[in-house]
Amino acid sequence: MNWRMVYWITVGGVAGYGFSLFQKDFGWKIPWILGGMVAGGLGYKFILKQIIGFFTKMSGQELLVKAVGLIFGLSLSALLSVIFKPFLDSLALDEKVGFLLLLFLLTTGISGMIASTKAREFQQSFLNRNDELMRPVTGSSCFKILDTSAIIDGRIADLCKTGFLEGVLIVPNFVVGELQKIADSADTLRRNRGRRGLDLLNKMQKENQVTIKIFDRDYGEINEVDTKLLKLAREMDAKVITNDFNLNKVAELYGVQVLNINELSNAIKPLVLPGEEMTVHVLRDGKEYGQGIGYLDDGTMIVVEGGRNYIGLDIEVLVTSVLQTSAGRMIFAKPKEVLMVKVTS
Image (cartoon, rainbow, N blue to C red; front, side, top):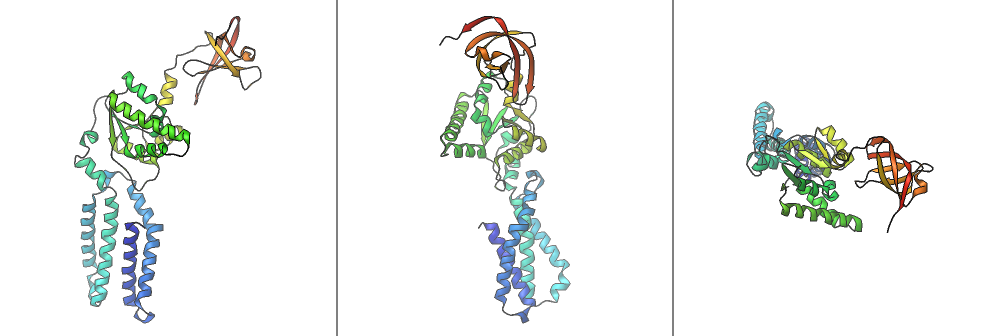
């Protein structure tokens, strides 16, 4: 049970006490107080939590810091007490105290809880905690946020060495946390991938090819790492570097620009035109009858019509067509009936 649940159970208890003052003929006050506590807890869990969650999805700059929210709540409470003054004058002293206490808890609680979820963002944005990161960027320099898949993939390190990648690379602490969870996984493959990602980050920081910042920011109300990543990207007006196809699609809905490593890899592959000749090592059968499959050095798949008879050989082929798919580029070719050289081991 978190402190918010305790708070609203307390509000429910105070409300139950207030109702018991108006229902003296219906028994003891304790059942009303207990009923109010139950109602307060259930109300927070199923209603207020959803309302608060709605506001926490807004930008941090759109909400007030916690102290401002509390002050607003106090002011609202005072205003409402003035509005309800005729009603309060008709109540007994204990009834009046109960009503004012409930009004105070409701107004300050709701405004304070909504603002408190954004207090840290407000401080980081305007109190210079991360002023070097949050300062507006001009020119070609900009922020780029690395997601978990891009770090584990490993190609980002080679890309940084080329000098084509400029600006500041941001690694949020929740991404580092996800890498740590993967590195601690019971599955050997996942554990190795997580450790490789952490090692890669350390290597990139030591080489100083680009500026890398571990950014201390989290969103406790959000569970999904991808959602946190996109929220941070919107607040910092940053781009996201990934090779996750699904994240790419979700980012479009959020209006966040994505730099997809797979798309970059496909874009810089050498252009092959129909009619060109090349040498291909045929590795295995294709899906269709008689086909053989080979690969270029960059991983591009070559489908050789009639290449089944040449499995294990290097053959000269003639390109017939090129197909660009979401998974990458595929080249279709036919063997030239010339030199066949056996592969030397």
